[in-house]
Length: 293
Image (tube, rainbow, N blue to C red):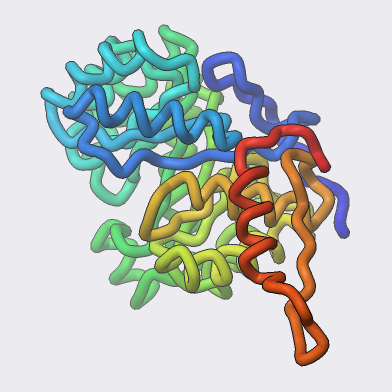
């Protein structure tokens, strides 16, 4: 395994990213953020499962108002996921979020990004530049012909330049595609070009079954090569499964020690007991154990 890439350290609600910090496990709620009760309940479940940072969607002003109430009820760092309307980012900052995620493909003109960056700097809130292969700007797509790894990197670097030019350096970057080779190439291309922490993930990876495999392959490659400061496994299902899968990937590579590692015989014709049911019962019983057993 390659030594871990050295990056600038960033603080998200008291949780450090990059530098010598462990690789952090992140997830995202799939409740309606405007439903405070449901969102708080899910965040607490995620926290019990080992989630260290949680992202929530902020689609409108009602969701911004809900953020204020959610922040009062939980102590897990909250990332506001912002698309299209920079004013939602400003509202989320006022609501007390610990980090912003903005998509350079749809956040709008440079002036809007600058306003958000200045407001975040005043509050000491980091920004993740979250590039997604499915939402690159049209001019970048025309230049490269499609959402290539190079196109994704250019999108990220343009946004980095804007933030740096207003004196903002509490930056985290992600470059996510739904296919593994393109995602891996994008992260490798940018790893030596910026000093900032990298949040890694395979976007729209699939269901709990197929998405876990695709994520394990892609993230395993990057982590083995020392790339990645935070990790999110994107699964179509209960986000608690994302956290479980993330820790299994990290534990398998010896990068985090949390919770029980269950080994089980795959069974064969010599088996005389119901090993499958027994292993599943053990795994369920140990689901929220934190000690590395």
